[in-house]
Structures are given as C-alpha cells and as structure tokens.
Image (cartoon, rainbow, N blue to C red; front, side, top):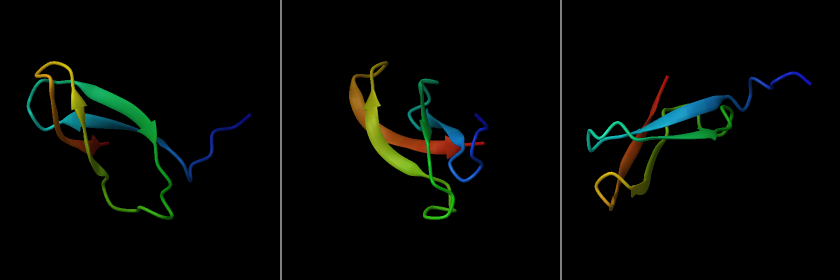
Length: 54
C-alpha cells in the first residue's frame, strides 16, 4: 500500500529546548500551515507548545 501524500508524517518538536518529539500525521488540505499543539513534555514534566518541523 502506498503512503498518501495528503496525510504526511510530521514531527512535533518541543519549544522548551529539551529535544523531545512527537510523531503524528496531519491533513495538508485542512491545515496547510505548520501545526502547533500544546502537549506534555516528560523531560520537564509540563505541557508546552510543540511545533511542526519539516
């Protein structure tokens, strides 16, 4: 089965500078801009902003 380029795999990197990442998929048609989500960073044990890196 081929991978669909409408929903690519992206990395979400912590803005706290810990280097922690989440891996997820996003729909390019609905969210063409870079994704930013507030998620848990276990390195500092807090919720921080995670931004999409390409």
